[in-house]
Image (cartoon, rainbow, N blue to C red; front, top):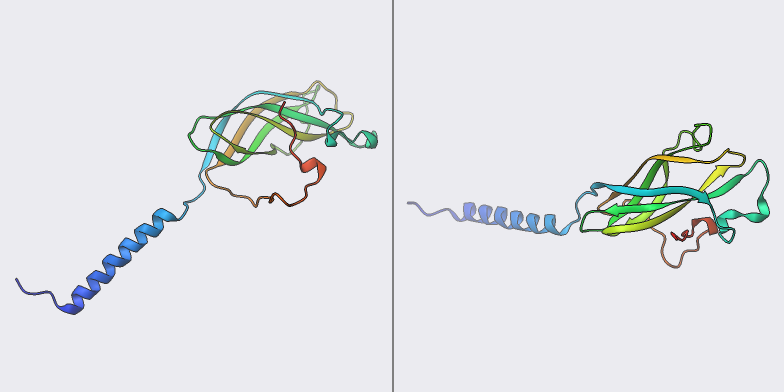
Length: 167
């Protein structure tokens, strides 16, 4: 057996060190945000409480919109929080027409911890839309890592951007 030349040894050592560093970095860096589908139950649409900023009691007029709260429960069967979760639904009026035409995403319910969580979303329903409303084809989809910019705690939000109490 012949001794390995010093230049070959240095090359192999450099490759080995590069491989080890690459593996360490690969483990430390976050991977792609994987999508997760969540179960949704007990979804119903009701008028916003009069005390809610979305009710805009001083701005009622025939050509405006009425505030409704879409409430329900979302179930995260996993062990990790699902972030940036969007809610999709088809909402029909009394005549079977879509309340929000050409729009299946009704809003974001934010982060969903493991287990059952209540949610509430504000929706602007065109004034004069005949009720009662039917909510169907409801689904929620989130991600394993953030995919949107998040407002910091010191940033001011508009009243309609503030959280709606799930109760």
